[in-house]
Image (tube, rainbow, N blue to C red):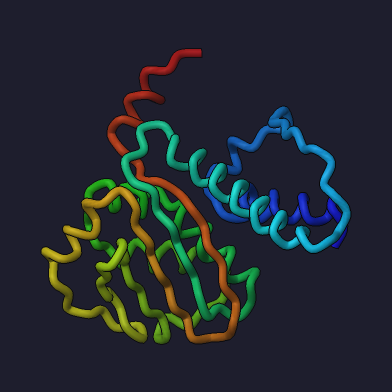
Length: 197
């Protein structure tokens, strides 16, 4: 992979592939890239660092969303294809009902499943498992398409945190994708409701 391809792939992965702010991706955004040295023993180190920096910047942009209180990672695993995994993860993270459930600290697996359903991507609902995670804490909400009785206090503890991961396991194939987003708060409505053009 040449330098131009490496840069393009890193930027696409971090900025266009993993977050719900595509509407904010304007052509006037500019990057300053210095000449990358030719492939040598440091190439992989540079590639790793470039991916790390681009991912960090993309996540910081999401965290800086208007009125955002929580940073949410949706990780879809086991889809029929990477494309389906990406469509599903984006559908979940861009759902206003999912975003408001996170703001309200509600472990609402139904909104996640609904967002998956209208995504257009293939999945078998009877194989879906959904988990919420934060650091060392995790809670299983659905296993093989069946809702699981879960500890509401533990769910609330996880959802009170500012960084939450939603893990969706599909058991269909090897397709995998991650999308980042934020919750939808009263502050978001206030900021945009008060805005005048």
